[in-house]
Image 1 (cartoon, rainbow, N blue to C red):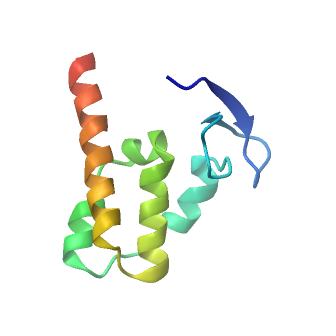
Image 2: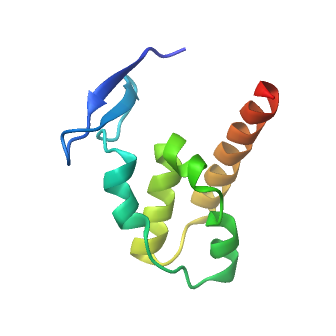
Length: 99
């Protein structure tokens, strides 16, 4: 298990983000990425896939990055979709165990 610690967001420099030594992406808080995630998704399949509760996006930066890529490029690769579904399944399983 990786040790996690808090680091300040590189954009706003006021919110803290939970990171680990293995984190490859720069620490960006949910509030800064929320601006990039806004917008309408045209593809109905992707709209259904990305239409998950906002709380999941707050907890997981990977899910946020996938949604941002979808807005930026208009589509996702099959590997991205598969990885998104796997991470979402893990999050839902953790929630089920907590209850």
